[in-house]
Image 1 (cartoon, rainbow, N blue to C red):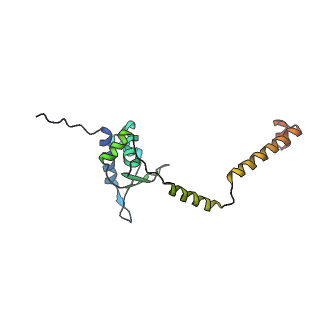
Image 2 (cartoon, rainbow, N blue to C red):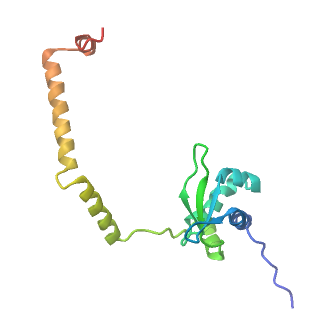
Length: 165
């Protein structure tokens, strides 16, 4: 009986596991017991030898899978590192989602969207009608354009008349 040939783990899966393991080694518990790593993500890719071609897929496996392996609480920029909450090491499911391109990203339900819209409306106030405001704006521009055309000002005369000699 022939042995089944073992299929090697895809390179992107190895990179994702290595990246997560390095995050774990650098992580410290916060006041609530969560493990938090503070790192420069691009520098860590470089340190671990993850080529740019794999970086997008590693990111998908770790941060975009459902549920994610880790969550970026603050994206690093301008000399500040990223703050990452670690949740769990990458599973075969996380890798499978990234390799098939069928990442089932978390989405909002209709009720959640309605609740967010209500919150926005509450902060803006009920008197704001954006469509009517845009119509009013367009009417005012048209009125100004008509007035300028009636007076016969061209661009240069208008600039001179405004004190920009």
